[in-house]
Image (tube, rainbow, N blue to C red; front, side, top):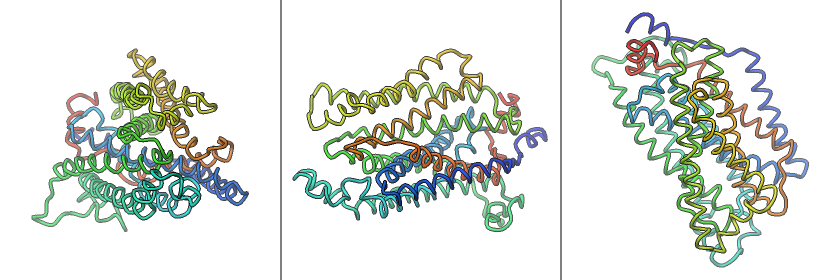
Length: 421
């Protein structure tokens, strides 16, 4: 590896203090708003916003890691400069686990109908399902087991990813010193092979755990709606949201920290093509669920769709979702120019990201808030608090660990032979 490539990759970044102050301030504002809304007699509003953001950010954080794993499984080289940014989303995973427990133990009766006492005798079929499959202990056990397994696999993956870059460098002191320690003689580890195996395991664990998360925390909120494709619909939408956020974050960091020599327009061009494809696949999974409900005219499931298609404000929000997630990306990402001009691509990614957030409102709120819809200033501030908390975790990760794979053979070859193209 040439000295120039080493200098390109070995970059330590430090976010301005103003960014820290802003993010911590936003998180505190969201937390205080959440507590105030509960104490003010609107616990349903606060917990529904909490539920919404838990589902959304859990998908985004896990989706970013899956995207990095997919690049390792397929041995792709185009996205290697973005890989550590994708991996940084894992910094939010411990928070996801805590949020899961808080939601189940503290807010379950507010937003999970199958845990509320007044719904225990809904009807014979539903009550049977809720008392067996959706009882508290079973939901808690499988959620902790599946998500915990995914998190453990991810931590081992991150260990080998960072260890590969930093072992023998004495880069870290204190708690993370084991990541830079020199291996003993005879203990050399093939980190690439380990990362490949963990990536495959994470892909399987992700698909299973996110499917059950979608079933338990979104689909089952409505007692008569069933869809075996709902898990795929959720976790692929989460990957699309994660990809859009990676584009936004990497673009901002490229400008701020002068990373253009590593993260080039070619990364954005390929990311845009993938966004285009995932947007089309998102519509495919949506239509694949809608079509059988429509042509079979199943009344127990038609009500789920009818509420979101014919009743306001969900009708308008559904069209906003479809426009932001499919129509705008599909139309605007066809020309080559929009794929390589960063301001345009970031705008498209932001619109898609916002649309996927609105989608979760459409999926969750009608099943929880039966008599009214309320997504006001307090819900916006709570959501902003979650955004700030997520970005706190990501920025701390990226400022502490190497932002690029210092010993990533494919990235080194890419920079050495193709000048970063």
